Image (cartoon, rainbow, N blue to C red; front, side, top):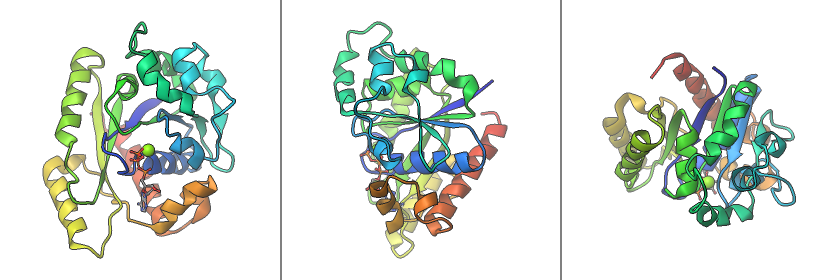
Length: 257
Ligand SMILES: Nc1ncnc2c1ncn2[C@@H]1O[C@H](COP(=O)(O)OP(=O)(O)OP(=O)(O)O)[C@@H](O)[C@H]1O
Ligand SMILES: [Mg+2]
């Protein structure tokens, strides 16, 4: 069957989409899985966190809008064991340039489908919006992982996200499922964080991964060095948590949705 395509999505900004996408890619790569990460965010945070400068090379913009084959947009991430299709600031224009394009919602699906037999996992990191780029990711994907930050108003916006998933199922991609909800930036010292965990588990029940990602300064430092947490702080709390999450992802594949 080939790669499962999984999008990290939440239109709320700064909830840990990119950190989770990069860390899970590195974790599964280290476990011997063949992983491709697609940076679909014009902010290019995943690309820079992986130490890749998306300027002056083909990336996801060229694959979406200039008919460059996705195979020609792949770069191996140095030091970590996964591949990347980088973003660049040109992607900011794609949201507008896609509007009049043919099959505008299916561009990413068309670009990624030929890559399915080369990988076990293709992950997509989304911008914090529900615009055409995110719709492309949802149309291309088998499932989504929703990072939720353990902060005040954690559930805010999630009903709108669920509505969007339902609209995409009806119009574009009937097979789209929720692989899971991951709680991020958990601070054990605050009562609020535990309240959020309880609230999210109450709402999403078994969809919530057992692994909770701790708030860890090392995770916020690693991107500026262009390396994953598995190189920056191997064996630390954050690396251990993301490796456990990767293990849960592997387990969930074996159980059909
Ligand atoms: N568990 C964590 N502990 C500490 N800092 C974290 C953690 N997870 C993420 N961060 C930091 O929080 C900020 C937001 O995280 P991240 O970029 O992963 O979120 P995002 O959802 O991708 O944001 P955006 O919506 O802008 O794309 C970043 O500076 C990141 O380094
Ligand atoms: Mg991000």
